[in-house]
Length: 282
Image (cartoon, rainbow, N blue to C red):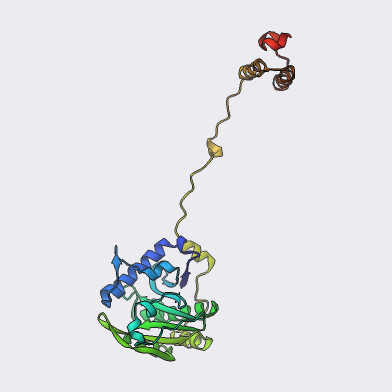
């Protein structure tokens, strides 16, 4: 199943994102030997600060097993600013309907071999189909993606061969890298689904999305809970004392009359004049 995390909801999925960044560190840093920055076991670069969209594969145990990042090409992106050698002197592609797809990876340690729903093959195809469907539903027509020759073969085997390439194949760490172009069409998505036997909705429903979110931090109560609140102590003696103070502090006949009316309302009686202060005997 697929969860999409973007700038609007990323604050709710800290645990999911941490697992995703850890997966990227294992794949791109350890396995592929790319020159990536890894801190505390997580691979995060400055493009992750641009609020990209992440299409993330989740297994039945709620663990991250695959991921890919989608970023607009109208601003900074990897092909223009990091992998520019691939372009071989050509200007970077920029369009409001062209997204860059990078950091595509699957967890080969957790996933099985074969063709089951928990296999590397199925998770790869599910992520490809979901990322294309998400892009299409967002108004994107094409994707440019930086891949290695192995991923290029995976795309071809999955009936998702790029329709074109940009620039040239360039050495990158232990492998080479290239830029491929994919259209976000229903035909391409359907081909991937048929190849992997994927049916139904690819994305998690609202209930599962809520279950995957971080547990909310309980808010500190601003009032005493009802069950622990205590009734204030209010005796007749306390009321009489309050009334005496109001009458004693009266500075005019109007204030004194108002204080007497208050006493009558609270106590059902008129306070004796000798307890009210100097104005009471005027």
